[in-house]
Length: 270
Image 1 (spheres, rainbow, N blue to C red):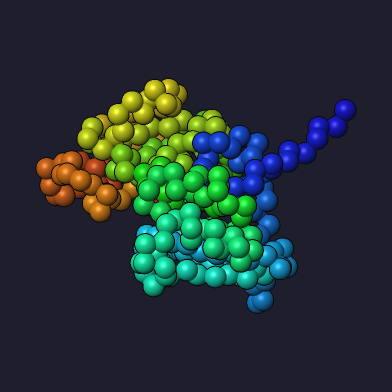
Image 2: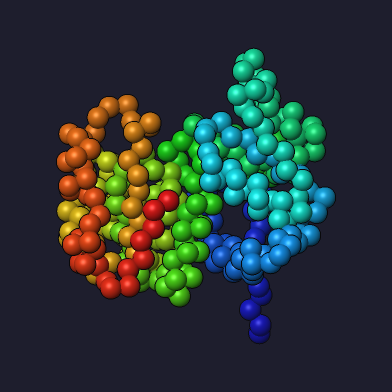
């Protein structure tokens, strides 16, 4: 009996936590042929012709917002960029009211970035448009996670059993959480490394299969992939390490340190 192809049944993309291994693999396989669009003279296909994509960003963004807008346009969607600073939000309009206004205008997709964890879930429960999470608070950044996983698989030809070390400010990183959900479902071997104050408490209870190592030299030994996170000073309510200089000495990447990883180690820096 032939195996039935996997179907993606989700209306929204809110996080990798709620996707199955098969869902993630289907997204990666679907994305692969679209890469060729970048090499064409005319970078456009009719996949989303007649659909509308609204970008609703409550936080500053360059790469994510531009990437979404270019991707939507290259798929022939109509795009609308909401400048929150000059919208009715400044007059006190709530997130749900804004989304319902966009829904009444028949927006097919709303791509949202928000400083509050769970904001995309709130929209998904209250409007009929499909919601795509472009980053919510400390929670998740699923498309960045998918991009990281896509890159690893493209460069390393697999995910399973690769040693992936995530270094830095994991406590405040939504990218790290999406990477954790996605990579553990694809059976990578994950090591978290950073100061104890920047490692989420009880993270090993949520992900019992991961390892935590506070010494960077030990963590990156024989690593296949190293994902180096930036320190998110704008999200910190208190100083969580003595100084930038000390952090750099203990967790900065150098040529000498890099030699401890595998010769063909892949470095990511989202």
